[in-house]
Length: 128
Image 1 (cartoon, rainbow, N blue to C red):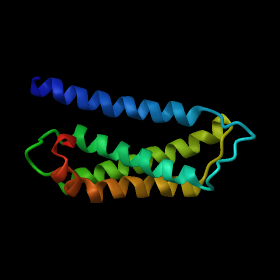
Image 2: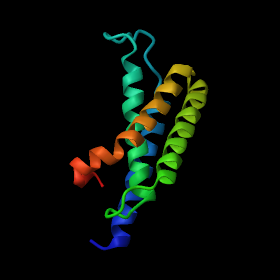
Image 3: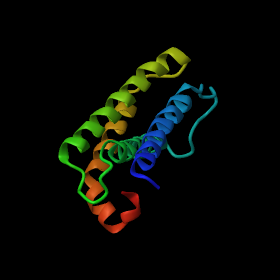
Image 4: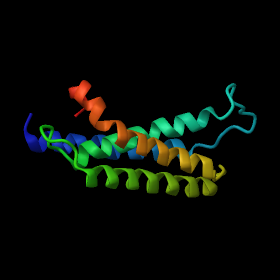
């Protein structure tokens, strides 16, 4: 696979995931829905935006041989946090609720992904 093909696939993956998050955020929640585990959706937000940030790291920094620079981690965390905040505001328009705790979970998930990126990719090289 050529370098440009690999880079394009990384961007397609990142943008595809952003579209998936948008579609999922657009779906109304049934009125009778009550999760069996209280606040489990916060864990889902944390995981979803951690993945969002990791896909952003890969798309923005395609050099697998060098560690991801700090600026890329900060950029990706900021982008994931801003996208998550935008989705929370957007949900007000599609009969869902804005939730500050969801927005905080998005940011924490992205920040955890940044903090864990180097140790995890040292162990699992294929993630790079």
